[in-house]
Amino acid sequence: MLISGFQKSTLLDYPGKVACLIFTYGCNLRCEYCHNPELVIFPCNPSTIVKNDDIYSFLKERKGLLDAVVITGGEPTIQPDLISFIQRVKKLGYLVKLDTNGTDSKIVKQILDLNIVDYWAMDVKYEKELYIQNLVDKVDYKEIEKSISLLMKKARDYEFRTTFVKGIHTLESAKGIGELIKGSKRYYIQNFRPGKTINPTLSNRNSFTEKELEGIKRVMKEYVKDVEIR
Image 1 (cartoon, rainbow, N blue to C red):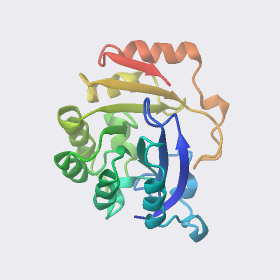
Image 2 (cartoon, helix red, strand yellow; image 1 turned 180 degrees about the vertical axis):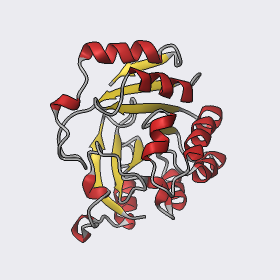
Image 3 (cartoon, rainbow, N blue to C red; image 1 turned 60 degrees about the vertical axis):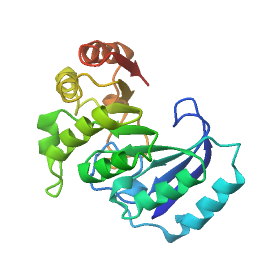
Image 4 (tube, one colour; image 1 turned 120 degrees about the vertical axis):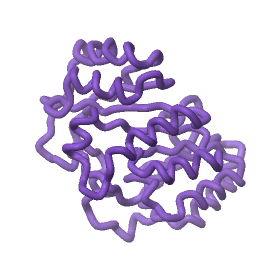
């Protein structure tokens, strides 16, 4: 698996657990507000690559100190050996959280059938109309709907989440996203924060106010019981 970033400890990325954080290189989407452009639009820097065996050795040494491994990106499901990597991590006794954009429902189903991921986080980027406008040609929107349905039916634990960007998302976006994940378990609203992004012109003007976020939350609570602003 092509790993281009590794954080040895985090208290923020797996709810209630001490975890390490693995960043896989590459993504099949080009969201302009993405905060990891070095993993998406720039060539992989060989100096940043972390060997899989080094990860396994680290995990063996940290048994009893770490609870979980979080795999994020980029988009982990484009990695051809993701499943075998997760299986090795599970054999070491760790919980696994997987972040995904849900664009490959076949991989999502495979992993769910193997029951090797303890917690899923799927980024629901847009409402249906914006998905269709923004997805690159090789990504089928139906894959998004299939992945959402699979997680709701089969995942051991999961969350859906959206980074709201003013100029891209609106209250109508919240309604559309709500329809996509209606009846789901948990949903997080994430406000856009300016910084290193694929589109360098994004700024504070693209962040929502607290009042506006509360409005989005009220909309989403019509569709999902547990809604929080993160």
